[in-house]
Amino acid sequence: MDTKVDHTFRESRSCPPMGHHSHMPRTTLNSCCRTFLAALLVAAQLLMPPLARAQLPGMGDGGEMTVSAERQLGDRIGRELYRDNAYIDDPVLQEYVGAIFQKLLVAARTRGELSPEMEDRFAWRVVLMRDRDINAFALPGGYMGINLGLIAVVGSRDELATVMGHELSHITQRHIARMLDKQSRQTPWMLAGMILGAIAASRSGRSGGDLGSAMIMGTQAYAMNSQLSFSRDMEREADRVGFGVMTQAGFAPQGAAAMFEKLQYASRLNDNGSYPYLRSHPLTTERISDMQGRFQFRLDAAPPMPLAMDHAMIAARARVLTRPGVDVLRLWVDAASSGEFARSSPAQQAGTLYAAALSAKDLRDFKAARALAERLTARTAEDPSAAKLARWLNAEIELAGGGAAKAFTLLDVKSKERPEMLLAADAAVVTRQPAPMVPVLRDWVATHPRDATAWRALANLYGAQNDTLRAVRADAEANVAILDYPAARDRFKAAQELVRKPGAPIDHYEASIIDTRARDVEALVKRQAEEPPLR
Image (cartoon, rainbow, N blue to C red; front, side, top):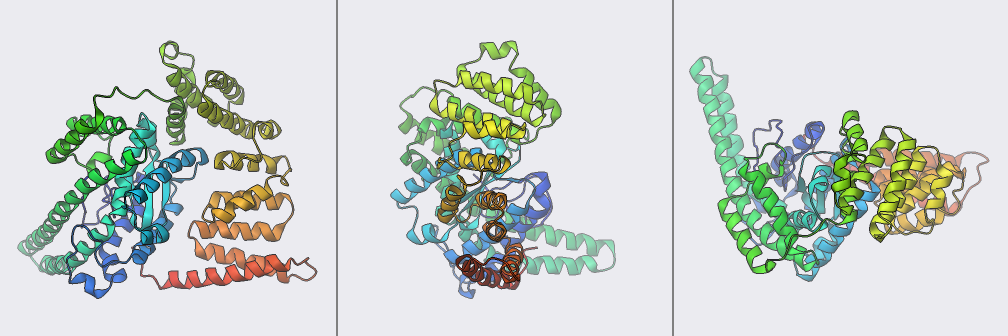
């Protein structure tokens, strides 16, 4: 939905997207917004071949920016996101969102929207941000960002899939590269206009300053209008492709209709600030008509989708994890005993109980948290997906409340589901029983090498076994996973020093791995040092 590019580089609540639509939380504006905006100006000059500045791409291609260059730019922005205080890797939410994302990727491949080169070289990662704003955004190189505020308000996984399908289509259609290609051709004359304006503004006298300001503003306005016109075509394309991808993936078209109705309603209210997604995705009359026509042919007057119990619990978790404050947490605890609770549906009750139990845990009221979790377990007993979420929450509460041994009994140490595996690993460390979980986590990171949280959990397990060398190496790999190569290099050096320590028992196989990885990371550090700054 429409992107506006702010060439003034001002810090605003509506952060213009790089390849798309981020309105990042206020705490992230200093790092992320400047990164995204600066990247628009420098990426085409520094990452694209000179020929790209002289050729106009067609609407269906990705310009002259290579897939590798786009991934490189995405990694640079992703590195900033991982460092941001708003970044969160919550295993439960990540599992829920990741399952939707994988289905959409399969559908995009089936429809021919995903080329083999993109599938192989792009990151294809969903980054969660601890922000109450209702927003999502696409980034270069296969990264997608989702605010917890969006997860908290959507009424079904189908609604969430609608937004994610739209954003995924911006990636698969290479809208980021095409925007950068257009930007690279605007940059020379735009900078020239701004330089001339700066020269005029520097002249003595009021008239010189006014003339300079007018020249700068006029140049920026023309550039923004040109970029906006270009992005509207992309938004229409993302609407069309995204709708096809989400329905191909098996998600109900009613979810798209419900999400569209919410956005349209918020748009009629002129966006009161609750939906920053609309500020980067304004619903034009043309797009509204096009989307309504598409729904009319696909929906067959299907009834609204009921609220699923597990989704209600996921939305509740997202609300609590945005850190709304002590007073709000207390209100959510009290909501489980209100008269309105008794009148609500079973799914709504499950969501209310989940939010209440998690809020009580965050308030360190573990007696209340356990009581609420017991009620939640009873409420979800007949829904397997919801019951699993309730069991994980019970274990989480026990871990936080000093009941690690009980938490261990609630979990399956052989589970291959990431949330349960990580909870079991935490319980194993606290109870000093790491042995069962080490091979489970080791196998996981072998197939998911970019899972920083799993690497750190494995490091803790090795530490509990007094296996310092492997613990340090796992910690180094965790830094690699979040693209912090200097920190990873330091940890690999520490591991090498352990190997060289006189009298230390040497695992030659592990030492060989460490030496190889240390060389690989050193090369990455050197390459990173050669990159021009984004700021």
